[in-house]
Every structure is written in structure tokens, then in C-alpha cells.
Image 1 (spheres, rainbow, N blue to C red):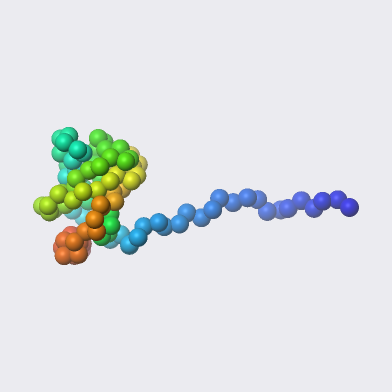
Image 2 (image 1 turned 90 degrees about the horizontal axis):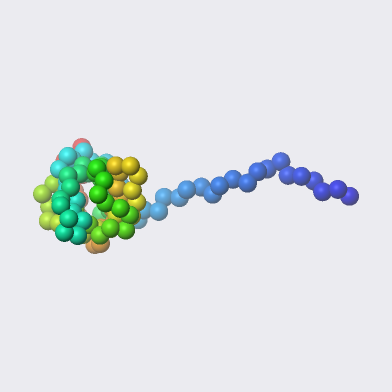
Length: 110
């Protein structure tokens, strides 16, 4: 008795969303990023959740860097760069973002 060959091929597993909270789009040109005592870099905030954000920035930050974010005049927020693609940088806040600041930033973007 011969073996039957399968017509199915192996498929890569689906990419699952791993964020703890939904990100909300914002359109703020005022953001800055500082990497442990280096010069402050101008950035644009693209989206935001209470746990992290995505910014557009021209280099200078790599995955794993501990950074300080200043969003629209807020106090510095400590975070870690968790991914980078081109000029896009994903950051995870060390502490959950204050909900009042979150509301203020997302309302401005509407």
C-alpha cells in the first residue's frame, strides 16, 4: 500500500496583536525623544495607548534603548524602544500613561 501525498502546504502562523491596549491615532507634531543624556530629537507622535506609542523620528534610537518622551509639553515619560522600522519607532512606557494626559492627547488629534 502506497502513501498518499498531502495537497496541503505548510503555512506560517498568523501574526497576533500583542499590545495590551488598543492604540488610538493622533496627529501631533510636537513630541521629542531623548536617549540617556544625548541630544533631544524632534519626533511626531503617530498613535498612542496608555501603555505605549509610535513616533516618527530620524534615527538615533535603537531597539532596547531607554528613552525619555515629551508629548505635547508633558513631563518627561520614561519608556523603552521595543521596535524600529525605518523612521518609525515603537515605545513601551515604563508606567501606564496618566489617563487625563491620554484623553488630552487623543482629543487633540481628532
